[in-house]
Length: 167
Image 1: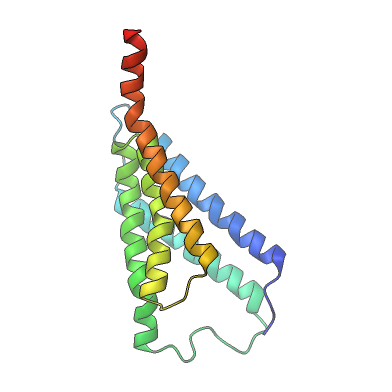
Image 2: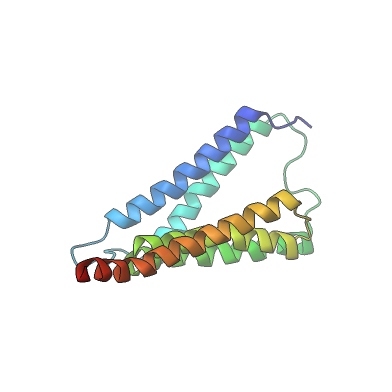
């Protein structure tokens, strides 16, 4: 088995970042003048996931085309369910992103979007029984605290504006 190189990790991270940013920007700018989406969010989410599947399959084929392992050998129903549960939760969460971008302000949406990382880590720990390092737990705590601070700042902004007007 070939080790994954740093360039491949950087490429995968860049591709994931591009997908997330593109999805958010396209949803935000595709709203009509009333702020509603002129298409079915469920269909858009399905197509988004389909594109991710195709890119993943092509990448897998390019990287492992000479490998004897086909990727599904030895997968049991219990192994499949360990990945299906977080996958289903991700699909639901991705559908909610469409509605969040329509109805929530930017700081609130950012908190909700960042919450995906925290829920993934918790599911990773509980369902897949993977141990997170101390550094990973600290990073999750920092992310959570930054979400709280961001939301508090958004909540305090109207009050601060009012206080400035009263001066």
